[in-house]
Image 1 (cartoon, helix red, strand yellow):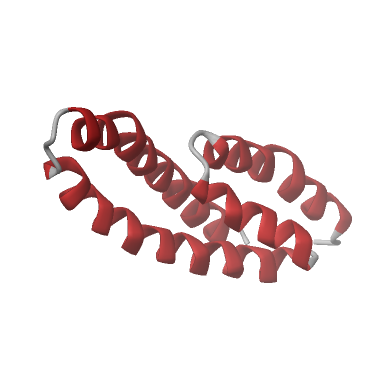
Image 2 (cartoon, one colour; image 1 turned 90 degrees about the vertical axis):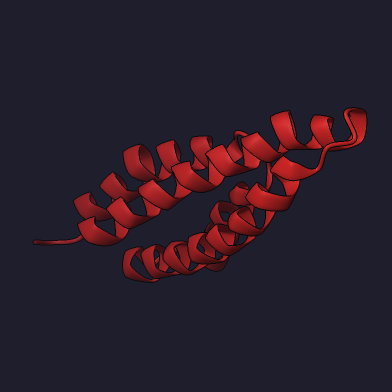
Length: 105
């Protein structure tokens, strides 16, 4: 499960940074500066990476034995700025250690 957690943590940060770049830089440039270069380049990359995020979150949730609502909450965290960082921290420091403590080695 450690490999799945590491993959999830990396993609959560990447998706979070891409989403922040879109919201903080790209959207103001597009709508206030009439320049859509950032949205046109980062937008499709974020869309692809978000799909990877969903797959890796599903993989981690399956390995950890999460209930459907928890899995959907973590998946939805990639759609709201800053929430993917919170979810990554919650998953890696609270939920997964609790799962590892419950399971016998």
